[in-house]
Image 1 (cartoon, rainbow, N blue to C red):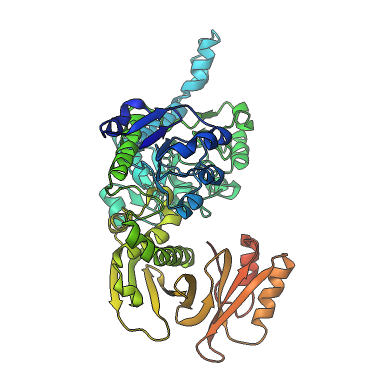
Image 2 (image 1 turned 60 degrees about the horizontal axis):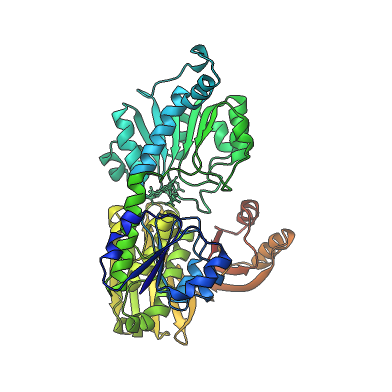
Length: 526
Ligand code: NAD
Ligand code: MLT
């Protein structure tokens, strides 16, 4: 067995690999696509940080590759889809750098409050200027945390020691979990209006992209200080520039940027802006932790054992995997579809399996479904193994039932998700054993292929509805590729599912929602 270790992953952390007799470990620096293509064919496993890109093209040449390890959290440098299609497991190390990122956040907060970088720069110019650098204290200030997961919680604990009052916005965790940390869970607007310091700790998703934009920055307290050590793109950098220049925002500290590397941002011209080049995880300890975590995973897998942090494929025996694979894909799609239809905080998920599918062990399929539901919220930190634990920790109850006999279908998976604002039920099946379809949404029978971009539009069943929605899409130059309508009775409620060639923007969705007779509209992108 041969393992290729790239990108300066800490060698000390590779001990678990060296302990396996017969394993050869090759250590090299960052590789370009062309360089990697030339050597990848020799290796059974590869470990990268974020510099080397493991693209679909590289994977075409990876004849022996079984597992890819990412020493860190984000797997954006690995083509997950191509890896999954080739049956290559991708593992990451989501826990090892939590403390490093939390401590970096505290360092940024204190550096902002006391203007340390600017004061250092002045001193190095030979100027002893005490007046220019009057700072503020953290004690008794309100800290608003957006995203109260691992790093957000670790920041909360540290900020408490600084005697700050902590409020947080995270629509996916329970008030009880927050209260256990001594944090008050509030709405986003309240964080914006109340906080003296705002720190961001959520993933970059469709929902969080530019969440802190000009509109949000208008709502913040005058003189707020903002820190982002999560992911670039959550803050609209242009809007932040304006708010820093006007003084509405007194200071900002970014460790992450929408485009990285970034060496010529207009933000760098501003005195009240400080930054680091994505150093959140760059501590000796964190880099050792992530190297050890990922080396252990690879060592386990190469010795035929279970892995803990697989982000794409369950670690089942190849024989069982081949049998349940189409159901796993269907379950992940159903979960992802549900996640994009839902409003509110999830309290319970009921999964019912019917038909031939119950001949198989369905627990891994439920796990895949949970991963599908939680993925858009938690991104890389939820995986095939930890999904049930993550659900439980978030107070989500999961019930699983099976029925041998079902009407109309050979097999069916029905997922009911109950939130604090209502419930939604979705059923899916496999036609011909491998062709996934959504066959029911909230009691309305349909037959929709779960792929690409789809609009789900509950509406009143009356003449002209399809035409009106079609006109709005036509006006916005959005082509409809397919359409399904389901209704229970004539003149009652109905649901239309439209496959569209490009994703819609919020304005188009609003225009559709305003059509008389439309009850709701949701964009689902798979
Ligand atoms: P996590 O999954 O434990 O926590 C993320 C939290 O964000 C969850 O509690 C989730 O409910 C919440 N969330 C999701 N969508 C939200 C929304 N729309 N509004 C508010 N909250 C939302 O992740 P983590 O390990 O705490 O990591 C947090 C972020 O930090 C991630 O983006 C991760 O990639 C990043 N990170 C950066 C560095 C760095 O080097 N700067 C290092 C490690 C992690
Ligand atoms: C991560 O995703 O682990 C962090 O952003 C740090 C890194 O990229 O190494």
